[in-house]
Length: 426
Image 1 (cartoon, rainbow, N blue to C red):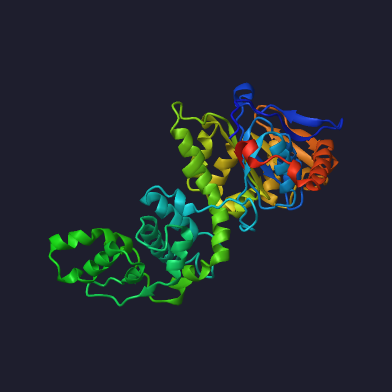
Image 2 (cartoon, rainbow, N blue to C red):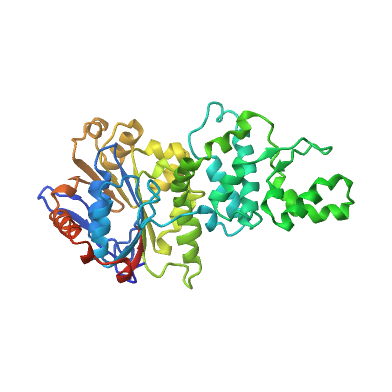
């Protein structure tokens, strides 16, 4: 992070006099939190009007930016480096690209509860197959199987390694044993092949379980914990998770899971370790297409305490209904109500139109017929503002930085290296 306690001003739109509408973001000055919800249909300009112009101007703040569109990311990163930031670029679309950092969610699992949460997030992410809504048994079974495999790998019992990639490799090789006299379906995790004495001993103990005394059975409790919920039937649908978790799915699910790790394993935990339970420097988490990932556990509760931890979040959505589809109506309302800034760029969702009409105190049909390029700015304690969206491509600063970047590209040795600037996560 960049070591400063100062906050940058933020551009929210353009006023009728063609001047940017700029606001202070220091919550101790404004009395408002830095949580923002930005809603607009596809192509309405949420990213180019809010996210990118303010990243170009960031000089004091710290940011974690989760982008689903990388068209101008190199220009943004160039501007941040010029302003003294170090960029940690995690590229899920092209992880092999130069300067891309790796990300393994299993490495952020510090205890069994974290492992169970990761298993749940992966099992319930992605497109649902027909019938899954009506019968959650199959996803629950997948979650149980995955938890056993993740636990085994994370605790170092698998000789191949302790990465999520290793867990998926092992999952591809699982086989099913026949039910024993106790009615347990044994999941073979490939212990014989991993070369660890402890794993072979545990499996040998387990297979001799029914011939042991109660005292002897206690010795194998650790191994039984791995398998206590892995009792799925031998059915093709019970293997659906293993079929979904190939390399491309792993990259996709990791991209969705990073939001959870940001708020659980990294930023929030870091704040809890501080004397005043707040980060030493303010951080803004910017999430493009926020509702297209998997839900962040208990986020409706977490967002209410972000301000005191010096954390803010900017969520880009296509509609309020999109958020409700991910979190449910009640939690979605709670999340939106914890954002002191609401920017609306138009859209076709009727529920969102009704909500905006009430917030703006204007007729429903006026919101529905909102002109393209117009924007509603709603902030707690202030009258709503009707403005024009900020045009990145007409921004003199953007044009200047773009020209500098092109000039630098012809002289590769002239740009600063990561070692010469302070760290920030992009």
